[in-house]
Length: 257
Image (cartoon, rainbow, N blue to C red; front, side, top):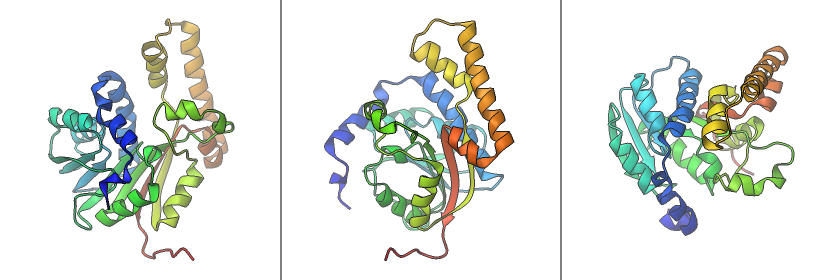
């Protein structure tokens, strides 16, 4: 596999990405992403964990602080991301490497678990990366934002501003995984937490703090959660902002044609 599979524009965009770093914002997002990983694992023990597209190491830092695994490794396409990971002093982190976005520098079945959190929506060739993940690990935890909503085709510039070139629903992600011979063992949906929305509203967007806005944020979150509990998984998946799955290699390989 040639390194040129990643276009020059994508590589250069991510190389410097973490030099414009907002530690508080990224750690807040990572707090919930790490918790989703713990929740979907349901007490399983993974002795050797690799995060693919580890960003600035926020998720691994939080997982290590909670003793999720005795051994961690990280690969990241961004040079600035690798630099941030190396500075974090993450407990039990054994290696950090720059990689080309597709080829993992490890032998077959090297890991118990690969984490791919909010990465797949950025990947130009999803199936190539998924096949490499399946080669290297027995299990994987994948989380994606649920960007696919009515009118998404009118918001292309909005999503491209975040580097999101793929959009998903829970159904479309499950279909992608199943057609690549992954078996979904557990999954969960999640709604953006009020503290994340408040931070985005007041700090990122620099809006003036408001009691009315706070009430609106809390009320919307409570209504969505309540409706999901009453009407079940189908509505939950429609209302959710992110979807997390625990997968393993399927015993049977699906042949296309």
